[in-house]
Amino acid sequence: MRLGTIISSILLSTSACLAHAQTQPQQKQPTPEEMQKIMDATMGAMVPMIGRMTEVMIETQLRIAEKTDTAERIATFKRNLYEALLKKGFSANQALQITLATAIPSTAPSGK
Image (cartoon, rainbow, N blue to C red):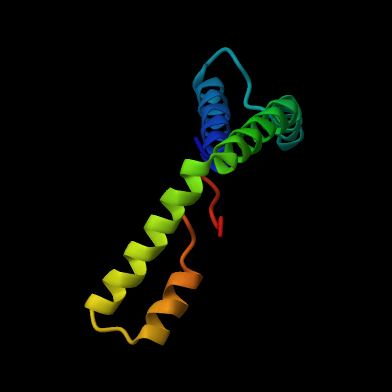
């Protein structure tokens, strides 16, 4: 799961809790300062977890990248892309430039 998705989910849950709290008749609506404190506490609690998740994701990606099979599969992906571009009518130079600019499949948003 991507980090942005996790953060969005937690913020959505926090927002839902705040919305629920606001609809409860016995509770007063939080002031902007109280809401800021709630958000700060939520974000403060998330930071260590996000840091650890990031470390795990990077370590996992490095373990996979070290495998011989990974390099072979990336080479196959790039070669297939290049050949498909040629078949679609791109010149050899255009196909090479597109292939170079195309990121390999990754969990990172812009992993080249």
